[in-house]
Image (cartoon, rainbow, N blue to C red; front, side, top):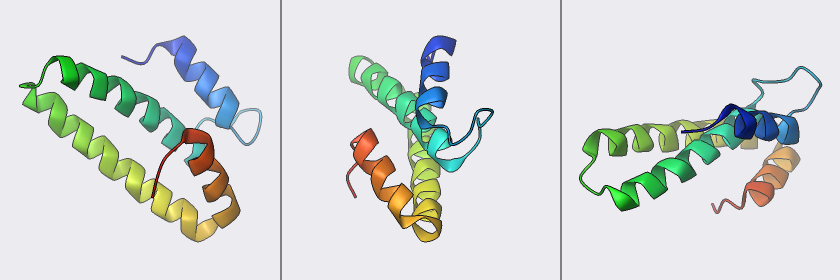
Length: 88
């Protein structure tokens, strides 16, 4: 589970402004952190199909957000993908 300290650090690192908590880069960063944690959980618990479904839904949401961000801000998209070490 994503702790509040990890969440605050991710928001601070990827936010655009001071009170920004919901911009696309912040949402993608938080989803990526949650996906990483859930992936490690599923490596230990391969039969946990409910969590696997949740993981697939998060991956789909992140993919849609990245697609939107690529259309609206290509430079920001490339910087975000590089910073999060995502491949496309």
